[in-house]
Image (cartoon, rainbow, N blue to C red; front, side, top):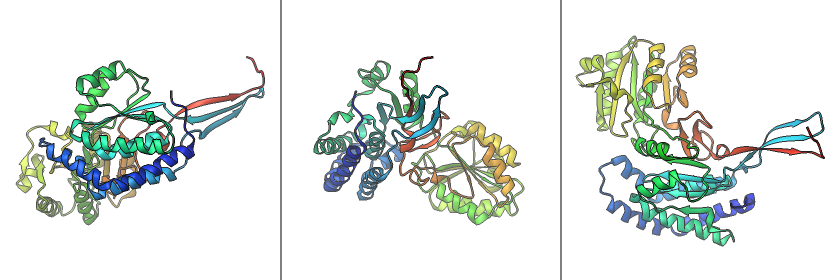
Length: 397
């Protein structure tokens, strides 16, 4: 077991990593180009996540620099109690120990997620996808250089170059102690990890996010929010489903405007029976499509009778990630926000803000759609467990 590094040491490694990322910027981009050229898959969102350009390197540098400036999440007092017998009791945050991050296609995870886990006092095991192997190995090499230059063991960051069979074997019978697993990727990856893991897993689940245009909506705001929801189709906070209140004034005109704007951005628009008939759109063949996360240039629009029906529909079909109501009626917004069962609920704002950086956490390890032990973006301060510290002078019970 690695002894907890001082906060000064952890911060020094993070700042060194920022310097190395800047120094090796062109090398990282060149190596990533090889990964991109070798990518033969047809998944556009996967390709988008795989790509490293100057802006992505800037984000990596910003992530580790910001992490170095944040307070230490370890050893934070959460509770204290003075026992009748004089014992002093504290509950403080503690690191998990070893965190395994399994992810697809995103070399920036090798920086940001590893940085968050390292800052919170954990040893990191990284298992990236084969499509980003060269990019990941280059970044891990920089982690090792940063650790060495700060006279710290390179054991703190380890890359597991496993195929699927080896990964399954490691999940079922780890060859070293693993305290927490965070899978970041599609539903197949998450199901695979859940099936085989023998330790706690934080689920970064599917998106399939909904926007509800209430009958008292500001229609300009509604259009802006829906269009913004499709501005990055590979993001888990993208919008896939739009529900329009049956009693919305100028409903037909609004849907027409929305559809033409979406089509101008080459987004395929599907409709339920009512919306498709009124706007000559392709009709969905089955209600099962309401469950689907698209991760594509595709959106589904349906008509709904009321806020209550919307809440029931979202709670049935969504991925438990994000949902938004567009309305000028505060009471209706409150009803929606309190009863929709998603990790983030919005009133007159875009679901694209479900992100650790945007919600004030600096960055995120994942966006959890589980309710234990943290829901929504998992920031630095959430990647900890806790521990009881009891100080006595001979007390017995």
